[in-house]
Image (cartoon, rainbow, N blue to C red; front, side, top):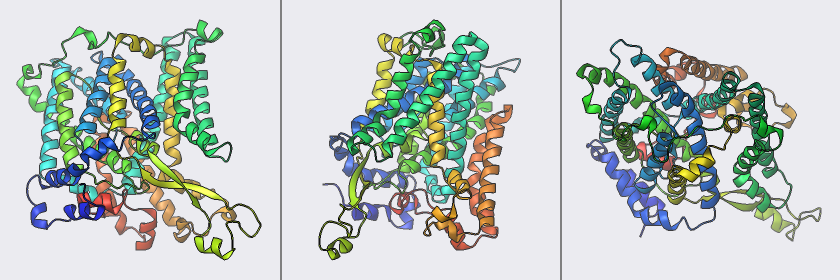
Length: 547
């Protein structure tokens, strides 16, 4: 029988002497999560798993391929098969063996920037090494550091990761999505006919507009609530399929807009073998790969763990314990396998990870009126004789492993010949629209965006309970300025040859929050409103609590 919530908490609240032992975090994660393993599969017998699988499949695989287009065209060492295999491997490992199956892992924008920068640096040398062999050693060094991190319980440093860091990084990722959408379109202006490029722009705008239209309707009071939930669940996939179909309608078809590139079924790029003989790399390059491996570890430590935190945010009513140490050890294994197979290393995805959890929410109808007020009226109707207004709120999350495994398995299915042909039918313009939608949607809920919009709200329409009312505007602006500067520095460096170092700036957000911000003229109450823990106390207990 699985332990209760209180019992699982007591597992994490072990003595300091035990926490000090090597690999104690991994052991605690396994002990806390293992009793739920069978239920993780049986709890999947719920309809919410179906729309979650559909939504995350499209939100994961297509952006992953689109992110990799630049990497594929620049290095000519990767293909669509490598991206799909990487997504499947991550989904299989973390859904079957992981402690946090809600976290979606795959090919991200930062890893494609990282790999492309390695190519530009190494291949410009007169005695350039074999690229895939060099990357294999980078991944091996990174994997070793991942394992050391998990064994030494360094994931406990996540207690210092607050909304300040998560919002800043999420803001950066959102703008990366928007930028890549623009790049997908502008590349076609150079490589294809003008009519085809213009049709791609039209398809991108149509994809963006349709997706937001369905999302907007799902949040209105129109139609039955089941219709609204259907549009929330399937609006984006429907928009993608419909917009892709538009490319083959009438005169649009005659322009031949560019579509996704494909390779042979289950075949790596350039007809190479799947196994990369990285042990054949010259000795000096093995040593040079070490600092690159350290930078990759920094990127994954922040990116993957923040994705896991956001997938288990305080807004989600979760009941099953997390496992940061154990999952980071698994991430080292997937990184090593990626190096052996010559595929991009997968890690946690933003915004896909929190989107996955959101799609698994079970909503309940709750009266806006307190029960005492309804009883005092003498009936179930309010004083005006109308039926009381009802609203829905999250009451549970379908915490299971099937949706993650299913969406990863669909990536493997896409590697077959017939489905690769279907993938080849998707116009690149549609992917640009998908990037814009996901980036803009993530920006809407970002803490930085919300604070900026606060200054433009009508005071008369702003709730008196709004927490930001209790913070001096000058302090809100100061806090925002620090976040925007950090975002700008990260975004700017990724546009240069120094992009290889952008993970260091991202990781620097943590000491910036701990050491600098408390010294600035913020009161304790103001900082508590402007910042806070990313996940609930229940989740943060796995890493020793929160800041």
